[in-house]
Amino acid sequence: MNLNFKAEVLKRKEDIIKDLTGLIKINSEMTTYDPDRVGAPFGQGIKDALDYMIKLGEKDGFDCVNLDGYAGHISYGNQKEFVGTIGHLDVVPAGNDWTFAAYGAEIHDNKMYGRGTEDDKGPTIAVYYALKILKELKVDLSKRIKLILGTDEETAWRGVRHYFSLYPEIPVSGFIPDADFPLIYAEKGISRIFIEGSLEGSDIVSVQGGFRDNMVPDYAEAYLKPNEDYKSLFNKFLKANKYLGVAEDKDDLVYIKVFGKSAHGSTPEFGENAIDRLFEFLSDVNINHPIVTLAKEKLIHDIHGQKLGVAYKDEEMGHLTINLGAMSTIDKKYRFNLNLRYPNGVKFEEVVETLKENVKAYGSTVTVDNHQELLYVDPKSELVQKLLKVYRKHTNDMSDPITIGGGTFARALPNSVAFGPHFLEKPTYIHQKNEFIDLDDFFTAIMIYTEALYELAK
Image (cartoon, rainbow, N blue to C red; front, side, top):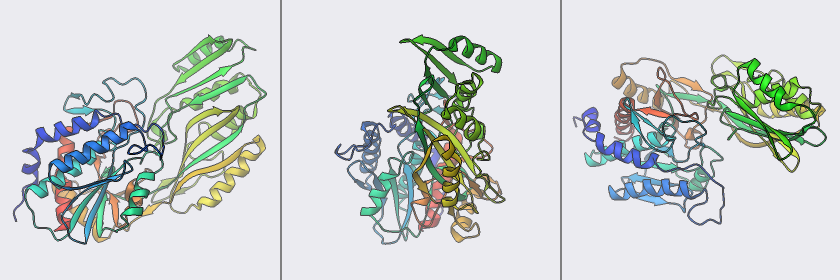
């Protein structure tokens, strides 16, 4: 069968943009998790996004399942063996100071702007259209193809865990459209770690910063007792360091806020950490409290964990990284949220013990809230080579596959790897303000995904 995947994608451009626009306009940030909230355990926005995709699938004649708002799938074919892929419909918080509306799906200079355009609603629509094209062409396949719809990838993966508890079948092969081209064959281990202690006994009343541990925080704030002229001191600090921030009197306290620049938690070097900046100030004005000493001596301005004694670099997968992504005050106790990512050669249990030893002197404790082991697939495997062949055909790019610090649902779907949609030479704004997807690149990704699914399932 002579298939022109490029032509098939381009003839559907208007429909693709229309369906992508509808999905991006849904604010699918997770609100709260409530298993008793029937049909919407992760909040109304995620429910709406899942419902949107299921309705698309039903309209186009696919077999569709919605598992009470936890997850779903869109399936083509009835063969026992299947090719699997997972997209996710939840997004990280939009954050602040977007040029265009975060959920406006506006197109400027051939780019669609909006939270989720690249991570991961856009790629999910891309795979959906790849599946739709194969169905509409009535291509003869030997395997079923299933697009699984995830719902809380950015938090705790409860949706896919529930899904696989009810659909435990394993695909013969597959890919996850939530990373980079040419292909990701290894992903670092990832953990969310809390460092906690008491905040009583100092001029600090409360501290807060960041939205999620897997984002570099773009703001951090504190309320201080007015025992010093903190407002004046903070303004001098901002000016001396050329930082942006505000200081004002509020309810007989001094309120200070400093801004940074967000970035993905797997690449903290590309952000400007506002929590680091806040504790620079608290240290500069000599506030005497273990939280300040701990931050200065063990946490801030150290994305590789040297101060905590856990630094490590693997030649293939790179450095261990730590993103100080969020902090909060809860019942007069502070909590730092660390996003730790580690390569081959690291024993996670030993890292945790080292962290505990390093914070003990500050009266702090360490808790592992979440841990995902690293993923490694042989780059010479048949799956990797088959997907690379398709990618190279459509791009003429002969680059080798890579490793990343990010984490994808490839860890949840056996026999799969992460595959696009981002092209490495292009800028990316995932987990940052002004996230966008270049529409030419988007259509190219759909071409690649359509032929990739065909090659895996034919």
